[in-house]
Image (spheres, rainbow, N blue to C red):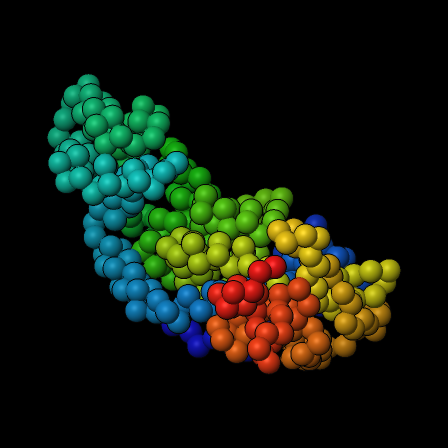
Length: 364
């Protein structure tokens, strides 16, 4: 596990943008000095993802190390590629398909390469289709065709071991991805994931963008124009968190709920561009009746966009706002920290949060 680097938030001048010509990410400050409000918001999201990634990496370091060792062990097996092709088809569309096709030994032994190769073409097709239906994987007929076509291709290359060696001898990540994508049913995501499952050296800095990662992106309101742009964004999150792309990918897949929980939490302060100035704002809660709170963003500080202080100075300004007792308070009873206006009340000589006040019998 890498030691987390000092956090470099991508807000403002560190925010990565995809160059329209080269297709590569670069820092916004290299291309221009005036970030848009969308870029500012994306930078805040980036910072929150970095924070969550670091926390989860520290909590699950042992699991990540175990997965790395297990992946390397699979790479040594003769049927590595055949097994992972089957695993890809099992989980395509729904990860629950793994249980029926791979986890179910009775089904799995019938679709190993050697088991299929021992059958004549007609019997092979019948067996594959029956197993796919019995395993209750999604799109069983289409996946049965993929498995049969892959068997034909692997056989033509000399069998599972020979095909694996051809793959491993491909020069670099892109060549391996292209080779895997040439197999029926394997696209950008699974071409990466097959090699990432093996913890291969060429794929340590990759993200296999799947439905779970897309769900996290949607929860944060992130939108990308291509698979590559989506992957590049999360690689930048990994780098800022001191992680490899592989580590972040496994964390996003296995601990999606933690990333979604962070997305649902509102920021206490924000950076917002208004009329050429960057405003650091805090939220104030206004009540229009006992059950109708309304948040209002109030500017605490502002800086001209063309004369922005450094990122460290901006973060120091944010901490100054957070530490200002006029804007934020901490409940001495439960530890809740939030907007001082609208979330706290003076009761029995103490300033406590509404939740604790209600437990003391206060009615709002």
